[in-house]
Image 1 (cartoon, rainbow, N blue to C red):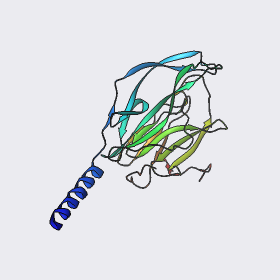
Image 2: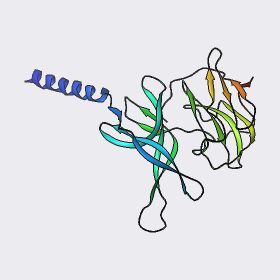
Image 3: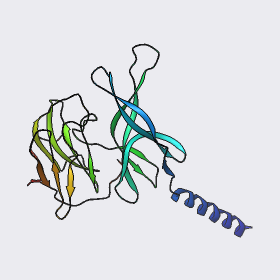
Image 4: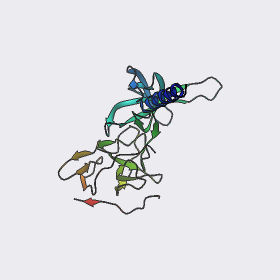
Amino acid sequence: MLKRILLAACCLLLCSGANAAKAHLVTFGPWIKVQLFLGPEADRVQPMKIRSLNIDGHSREFTVDEPHDVTDRVFVVRRAYRMNDALTSRPDWKWQRDGWLLIDRTSGRVSKVSLPDFDPFYSVVSWFRDYAAYCGVTDGQKLYAVVAQLGQRKPVIRAYISPAKAGDNPDSECAAPVWQKQPVRVTFQPLGGPKRSYSIPGRSNEPEPAEEPGEQKEGNKQ
């Protein structure tokens, strides 16, 4: 009798361990065409494609653009959401772009990525390994070249470029930064300004799903 009880207990432990180690099913839904509303009055539109991020068959978020695989376990993708633009009780939903999400395929966890000075309207992110390069815009309308590393609060690079143009078109402050390897370096191309290149010190680390940076840049300008 005691042997049967011990055997049943071992089976329960093995089953619970197998369930705990089971990876979650992370998928994307089909692309859907929507409109991105632009301008202070949201009176201009631009075509945009979104799709759902699904965890174990349940929709968790809506996303835009293609994901970037950071490791074989985690990836990042940009979030999209609907804003209620109505003044009355009748909703008037309008699609907007947001920041980036970090998704862990093993745990199924979805968390927001912290990107200093990232502006959802103007910033275009280029990913390399666990580094995000983009032109950031501060509340004081200053434009910065920024390289952020996943899991780190302080940016690897934060270098002042110029006053922001603050135009009416999205992604209009800078072109997408360009990465190169050996040595690792990234080049920024501000609108109407000269190119700026920076080398990246240190090395990458596997990010874990999760002080105000100063004015002085970090990293080495080339």
